[in-house]
Image 1: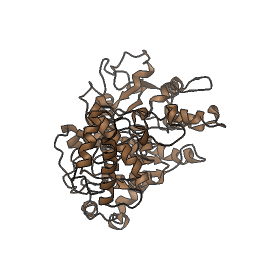
Image 2: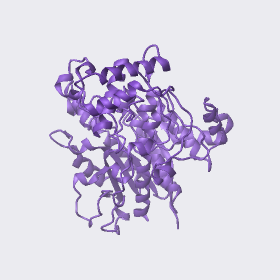
Image 3: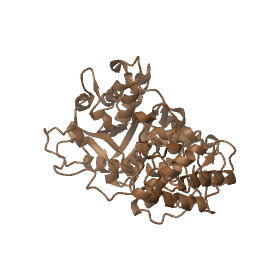
Image 4: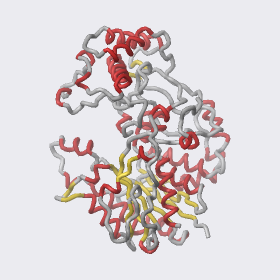
Length: 497
C-alpha cells in the first residue's frame, strides 16, 4: 500500500532540498510532501512561502504567469486564494533554530506530524556551514578575538539532532560543506562526532553514503564516502558536499547490499549547456551608465590590451576582435524566453515550464571601468586556454590596487566560469561582487545574473526568488541543487520501499 511521507525541512534556505524532495514525491507511488519548513532569513522565507503556495495547486495559478509576463508585482494571494495562502504561511516558519524557546515551540508540531503520519516522516536540512568551510575557517583565523570552542555555529548540527530525536523519522538527510570532514574542535575531528550523534539519535539509525555501494551492516563507512560530487550526477557545477542519509534501524534490516543509491556517475554538464538560451547581456557602468558609454569603455579596455606586448597572442586576438566589434550587446536585462537547444534532455525537462513565456531575474550588475577590463581579460584568457588566469598572470595595468594582492591569498580573485565544463561551486559570495563568477563570453564583460546562477544550481526556470537582487544571489548560493535533491529523494523512497 502506498505511503504518504511528511517532510520536515530545517535550515531550509530558499528551498533547494525541499523542491527536489517534493518533485520526487510527486513522481513516485509513495508520496512525499513538505509539512514544515524552518528558516531564519526573511527573504528566503518569502521565497519558501511563495513556492509552498504554488505547489498546493495541480497547476500553478494563471495569475502567477500573468504577473511574471507583465513584469509586475505578484498578486495579493491572501485575497485571491485565502485558504491556500494560509496553508503556505503555516507550512513555513521564520525561526532561528537554537534560539530561546524555538525547540519547545516546534516540538508539538513534530509530535503531530509523527502521529498523523504513523511515523512516516522524513527530516532534511543543512545546518549553517560557515564554521566548517575552508573559507570560513580562514576568515576566523584573522580575527584576533576568535575562540574556536566558543563559536556556536560548530554545534548547530545538535539542533538538527535534537529534532531528529523528537521526530524519529523513517529517514533523514543532512547536508554540509566538504570542510566538515577536516574541521576540528575541542582537540578532535567534528565529523565522526556528528556521525555518532546521528547514529544514536532516537531509536537509532543506519548511516549510508549515497554515491557508494551499500556495505553489509556493521561496516562503518569512511568519512569521504559521504562526499557527493554534484558534477557526477547531472549538475552543471563542481559542488562537493557532505550528504549523510540515515534510515531508522527498524527499517534498515533488508537494505540491498551493493546498491549505489544515486546510481552510476552521469556525463558532465557544461556551463554553456546549462545557460543556453539565455539572452546575451552587457554589464552596466557604476557611474554614467548607458549602452553607448559601456560599449565605449569596453572597446577602450580591449584596445589597450590588444596593444600590450605582455599579453599572450591568443588573448590579444580575442580582445582585438572585441575592440573592433560593432555588435556588443546593448541591453542589461532580457525577459525574452530563449530555446533550450543544446541542453541535455534531463535539464531541459527539469527547467522548462511551457506556461512560462518570459525569463525571470536575468539582469546584470554595474561594474567600474577597471573591472570591465579585468573581466574582459579573464574571460578572453579562459577562452584561449580553457582555464581562468591567476592574478599574477594579469598585466600590471589591470592588477587591483589592494595591499594583499602579492600574498597569493587572492590568486583566483577574478575567476571566469569556463564554458565547456561544469562551473566552480556557486556560493553565497556571489551576492557580494561577482568577481569569482565571470561570464564565459568576453563580449558580455560581466558577472553571472541571478538566473544564470540559478541554472547552475538547477532551480527550475519558474522558480522566483523574493527580495532585492543581492538577497536573490545569496539565496541561490546557499541552496542545495534541486535536481540533486530530486535524485536523493528518489533514492530515499526506493530504500524505504
